[in-house]
Image (cartoon, rainbow, N blue to C red; front, side, top):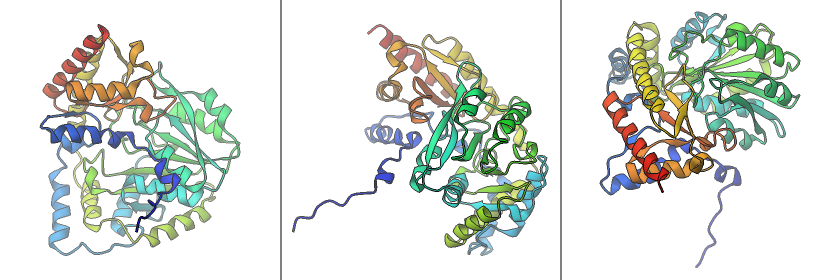
Length: 405
């Protein structure tokens, strides 16, 4: 009997995740025997010289060997919640272990927060360009994401006039990714204070402070948003994946800063959702605990390596006709402007042709914002320096070849 094909929901079919979507054609080329230089995914341990610290790996392994691989409490191991609270308190705000909720990475934390806060017709105000889930997930709960502008020719700084014009009583969540993915921009204390002034007339708006790259700040300007706010509620997002170089462990957290005690209902909703999905990985939580409680001097060495690789990329881009970039002050990405008219409105085509002709994989900027990311590509500057030189040699060759066609 012939059966009609079943349909997926529209909300699922509308989801795009450019960072991994471009992997599909790259995998096809690899199956044909081609070697691809992958500069698309921010996975720090995929590149030489940046392994997960041994003491964290040892703690993870010891948890397995000692049988500590059962369920943990739904909100996270008490000792990990306490360690995270101490770490957040050291950033300038009075975090308590009861404010901390451990999740399957920041991505799950975002899904839970959206589910607990968003109603039909409400809005999330997020930077453009932005990390794709900020656009994909809110619509699952009947809300919509509105993008505020970043100044692409001024270090991707906040456009305060645009933020002011887009704030209204429907905005339930205001998102600040700091340092920013995909641009690497860092927002400092004075800018945060100015932002808080704009948000002051909207007490129902919660600030989402995505600070997963906070330990990768080359400008020394980064501060915790929660440390600057004595009126507005802030939900801090952070975890083990980037600064602690353990992305596959999938351990993140949200920490609630509630200076005026307005989040009791939101907290109840978050906790109900957390209980319903059981818990995050227990051994991985213990690995993160070791990272928080033990020596962190290794972080400076890792950051120096990342910064060296960033500087090589900046030097190469400055000498390639067809590329421009605003210097990233944090994270490990740069958002490169395509200056040739041929590619300004065809950044995805640029990425796909570069992949097929030169076997270098980037991510199209329009995947981070159809409007505000168009005409750019995101590059991960984590590979070793010889690999980066090879990649830029190929990109330069590609641009020259197509400039003459």
